[in-house]
Image 1 (tube, rainbow, N blue to C red):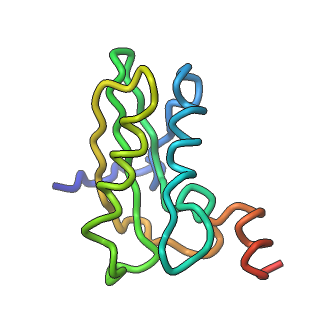
Image 2: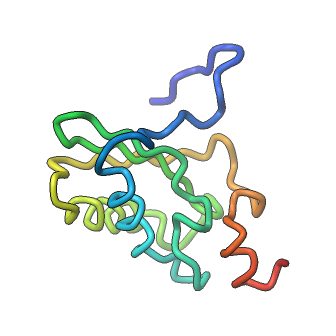
Length: 118
């Protein structure tokens, strides 16, 4: 179920960057790799939004490099397993989206450097 964006809303919702667990959740996401690309999914820009509630529930909105990615069915589980291991996280829900579509410009500078794009 996808919500329609209201005019002026960002394509990617903001993350809970001020939550005390945010950095640990990001580091957990960095332990998950796309099997076809030697860079973690966070630095690839596949994690769009991390929303963390006060009671330890984490909602992850993520995408894939392409809708036909061979691990499309498995990667959300890998992300959920990694994030659930963070102390203080009570529950994890991973939502897959293709809006906006992933592009190389979403990669971190480190990822682009590692893959030889800069």
